[in-house]
Amino acid sequence: MKITLTLKILENIYKEIPNKLSPLRKTRSMSSFETLVTLIAFSIVIGLYYAYLSALLKGAMPAFQAFGWRPLLETGWNPVNDSYGVLTFVLGTLATSIIAIAISLPFSIAVSLFISEYTHPRIGNWLRGIIDMLAAIPSVIYGLWGIFVLVPLLRKMMALGLSFLNPNGTASFGFSILAAGILLSLMILPIQTNIFIEAFETVPQPLLEGMYALGATEWEVSSQIIVGTTKSSIVGGSMLSFGRALGETIAVTMVIGNSIRMPTSIFDPGQTISSLIANEFAEASGKLHLAMLFELALILLLITAIFNVLGTILVHKLK
Image (cartoon, rainbow, N blue to C red; front, side, top):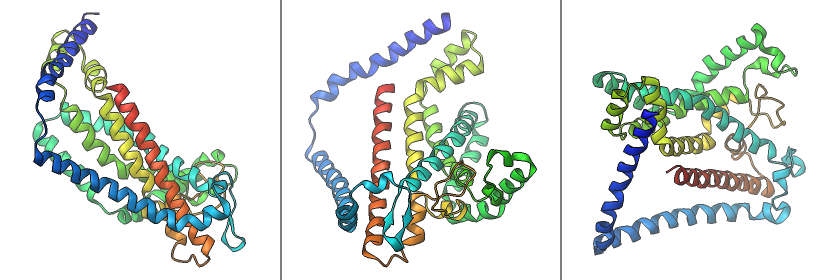
């Protein structure tokens, strides 16, 4: 009870500081330089979005005129017969990204807490350097690791008694949605960890010392104070990582199996929007086939934008 009461008092103190400073910020007008920089930044952002959307809409227009948004509700993909159902690839994209976030999030929080709070600063800096190196590894290297290490490991696990999870037996090959999700979790782990470390380091040290002085355990301080007061940053970092996972192409293409059939479980091979575009764009000869690939790219852009907007709303609510 004392710990909770003290926490509320300290939170109210830190909330009052920006309110006392806000009148000073409101009275200061923007200089001409700040106005110019703001206009340039705004123009660049709007210009990039316009360039992307106009190019995708122009390329996808024949598909929209022929099918509209109907392919989103269909599953058959047969360019020879001009049959295009993209629901399988949309679900594959979401499934791999959700698996990646579910695996990477607890590990990212744990590693970030260890580096920012519970290890020597020199060791923490050394570990952060290693994490930065992991973020700089090209995706094709992750894909090769997935082919020669991860996929055989999953194949052995299925052979040792996990085959009952997939009665169809296709998981024995190892190339699956699960393999793509695990690989994506390793790829977004450095991004999440760096964001969380920066967030955890912003927690006021007097707040932590006050909690320890009141007899709080390290678990209570970590879960209620450090993680509890940085929920908005955790959500924002997770959504940023989720967007990174949605658009990953090469590594996913190398381990997902590239099957156009609707998977029955995460142990089945599948396909994402990015992997389908990478596999078929160079060989697309028909007008509708090429237009459908542009429409898929537009759908992927819209999915990413939707989740970014949802993440922004959640961040503001948590703040």
